[in-house]
Length: 324
Image (cartoon, rainbow, N blue to C red; front, side, top):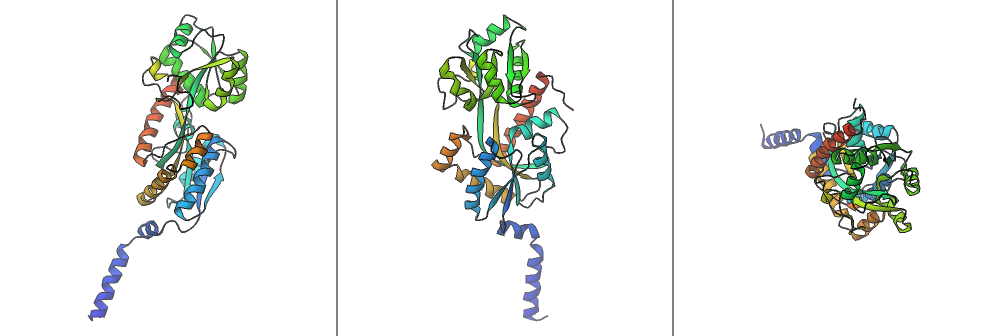
């Protein structure tokens, strides 16, 4: 064999050892990326997705196209992601209820731990506990004591059966040993209206939908559902520090990819999200929506998802929702 032939054979051997995924990882991305959103345009998740798509596109040098796949409480988009090729060109802006609540209360075509790879949580939203002015309580501990002395006489609102507001209140009632009736509404708006009117006595809701009504004196916010106090309400204690250690419910939005997506792609997107959240402009845009920026690692996101699956399974049982 000639020297030329020997070199040629060696080069062919090296080329053969390079798999297609290795080439793809090195050059990714070479075309636009789809970012699935499990809800219609205009909502909180959609807004976060569009901010992320803009900044991620700049970081990766390719257009990131937001594609709203609404329906099935998020299951339609999740199913589409499961079926997508694990090549980094289809991602989803997941919302906590889709991955942690929906599988706890119904049969789904996807397993959130098996079928998806967590990338990074972009941001989170804590909830706040608000009570009507007729309730003689200025903090969570007093509220629990008052309800225990009046079992079965009062109720709490939610934005719908199985929603975060419903399960947060049900979980709190279980841990605090409270006897309260659940009143379900078609969204947070009607729930807030009846809380203001005194038809219901308590509601766990978004800070953005409740804070504007505190000035009128009809309601008061007495607790925050996250482990840290809300920056917008530093004087309001968390539920956890009010005698209910470990209580935490919040919603988040984070990027996930189909299982099998190359680790190099996952890490590159996670790094881009972290860099994005180092931008004061981006942080300001998210905070205007009531979103606290996170930008954690894939491993941290995975731990959050596991913990939330356990929390919301407990909440579903507490609310007597059927788990198929």
